[in-house]
Length: 484
Image 1 (cartoon, one colour):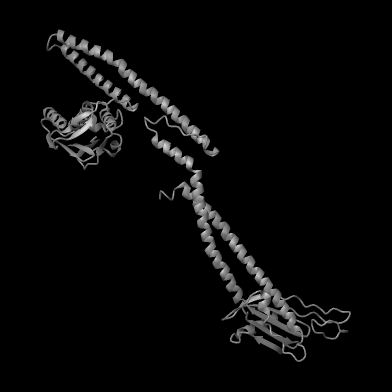
Image 2 (cartoon, helix red, strand yellow):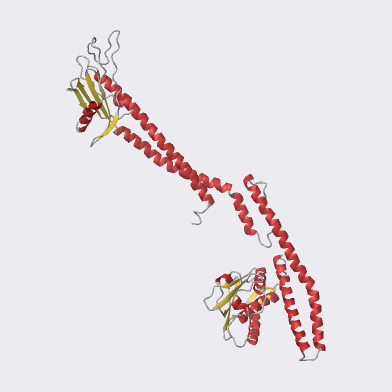
């Protein structure tokens, strides 16, 4: 279905259809023109034969045999001919039939003679003359031109003409089999040539349309490369056809607006994070010093503690926004070292057992799993996954952590029992500030930045973080990192 909806394929098919219609029409018209020309030549030869047959044979010679017709028709094949000559009273004077086995043709000749128009009247002062014999001073009367028809017998198709003279009646029939065979050959040639021509037209239209659509392919390639780090891509329009110049210019202008808007947004996030960092640090220090000065257990201490928690929360959001802005700009700095992921996972698992002792933690982690990466950032990724596994778990649920290493990659899978994630939420879990189904997140703290930041960190390590298409009643994430 996808290929059938291809614009390039439609151009090729429409070109072939248009050319096919033209060729078929031209072939049909040519075929009928050739056929009519042959029939006209045959009718002229039949008229000649009718006139010759009316002439009396020369003394001592046999009546004319109409076998000269093939030469007159331009064919080397002898054409079957039938001739019938009657006198004025309707008695047979001469009869000839190349196909003596076809007896029906004589009935057709007689029938045609009955339908032929009567000969012209001869003036009383003139004696009867034989058509074609000249008399001094007076031309012989001309008979009405015959009408030639096509009739069929059980064995043959005939072209028949009949003519009545003042003293005789002549009917002649010639077989159309050679003409039909020749026209069948021409039709066969058309049937072979037209499909071949259509294939050539379709192939030519395919290649021509491919060249015409090359700017579209270039535009598609640039669009595919347009990412946060690829907004500076532009398509040159100098070597492009005029029909696509305006489209490419509009697209380049759109990229410029996107790049400018994104740069402003990214700069705002980074500047805001930097500007908020100092006030939050001062506010945190003042709250901590005030806590030391108030009476333990008092309401003031409780309010100050709540304020300090909110400051810590704001500081965490600020750090995540700063990291995301750096990731968007492709400037996330990584301090790459050899990281023992087995030890890092064990440390994180111990924290889980302390924070959620009611959960059943299952592990399958081989020893000495090594990767090259930023240990603090990778710890933040694992911590986010385990934190979500605790937050979105059942009261007496379970967490399963598995790790596998190949020659090129390290794969870590974190799965936990939970309510099913809605299909509409699966594609948006990694969007920033997206919280998903309120039924799952109403009582869970967070602002929706953890997974998006975790994915950016993993991508900065040339890895990938994805939601596992797990079975019902559980949620899983697959973390894939390159070994080197």
